[in-house]
Length: 522
Image (tube, rainbow, N blue to C red):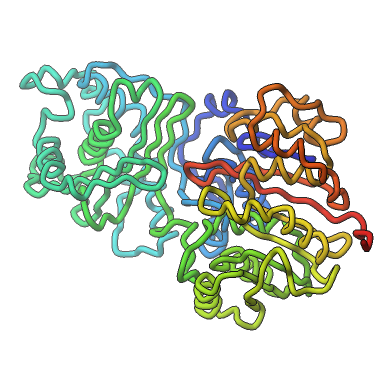
C-alpha cells in the first residue's frame, strides 16, 4: 500500500535542499511567472499533482505547507486549483534571514535583504496588476528605478537607533504614524486561518514631506501580513517585523499604508528554513467555493478524495453518509459526466445538501435519498465508486459502533473493480485495515504528517501481509480490534493508497481501496 505524507513522495526538494535555493522575481518568459500555493498539512501532494495536470506547471517544488511552480499567467486557469488554500505570485524566496538583536541594525539588515533591488518589486507588482486586470494604478518601471535608489548605499550603514535613542522603526515620522495608527486600529488586526498576524497600517497623519517626490505613489495602498517562527521569532514578534517591513516599503517606494481596503497585500513568511515574500492573486481563498451555500467538510479535502476515486464517464458514485453533500458537489463540478447518489439517515443534513445541490445547479446529476448506511437500498454490485466522510469523535459513537456493518454494505453494493475512498480517524483506519487483512501492522501509531517516511516503512506500507506484528504500545482501540474474530472477513477489498491529512486540531486519513473479487453469497 502506497502511503504519501506531507513532504514525502511528492516533494521536489527536501527541506534542506529548498532552504538554500534563492529566488528573486524575474519574468521567466513573456507569459509565465513563478507562483506558490499554500496547502493544508498532507495536501501538498494533491496540489503538486493538480498544478502539473491542469496548468502544465514546471519546476514544481514542495515544502511543508507550500508548493512552488512556474506556469502561464492565466488567471482563469490558476483559479481552477481546487486542493490549495491561497495562491500567490512569488516575489522572493531566500535562505533564512539572520538579523541583529539591535532593532536599528535589524531594520537596516531587513530592508537590505528583503527589499533588495526595487526593480524586482516594481516588475512583480506590474505582473500582479496585469493578473488582477487593474489599470487604475501605473507604477514606475525600470526608467524610474534609479530615482528610487536614494542614498541606499549610505543609509544602509547608518545605525538609526542612535537618533533620539529610539529603535530604527520608531525614529521617523512614518514609523510614528504607523505606531499611532496601529494603536488606534487594534481591532482591525486579525489572525487568519494559517495563524498569520496581519499588520494593518493606515497612517492618518503621515506627512508626504518625509518622502522624496520621486517616490510618491499617492493612490497605491498596501498592507503587510507577516508570519514568523523559529530563531528569528525568538528575537522579533510578527507584529514588529511586519511594522518594520511596512516602514521600509514606505521609505523605498512611497506607497500608502491602507488599513481597510489595500490594493496590494504583501505576504511575508520567515522561519528557519526559508524567507518568502509574495502577493496574493485572489481576494478570496481558493478553498472558498461560490457554489457551496452551507459548508460541511472542507472543500479541499472533499476535492482531494474525489480526485483519487477514479470517477469515469457514466459511473455511479455513492456517498452513503453524505451530510451536506460537499464531496458530491466537488466531484460533480469536476467530473459532471457521472451520476451521483447521496444517502443520509437524518433529514436535516439532507435538506442542507439539497439546498447546496440546487444552488450549484447540479440537480440533474446528484440525487439524494434518506436511508441508513448500514442497510443501503441498493442492489449488490450496482455502484462503481463509494466516497464518503465517515463521522468520528464522541458525538458519533453510534456511527463507529455500526462501522463494521457500514463496511459490509459498502463491500456488497460495490462492483468488482470499483473504488472506495473514505475519510477516517486514525483509529477507524486501523480498524478498517484489520477487517480487510487481519494484520496488526497498523497497531503502531501513525507518524505526524510532517515526518518523512523511511524506506522500510514505505516497503511495509506497500504490502500489509509482510508487515511486522504489533508493538506492545498499542491503543485500547487496537486491542479491541485484535480480539475481533471477524478480522479478515473483508478480504475482497484491497488497500491501494493512504494520505495523512489535517482537519485542524485532529489528524485523519484519506484511505483508498479496490474491490478485487465478488463477495460469496452466504
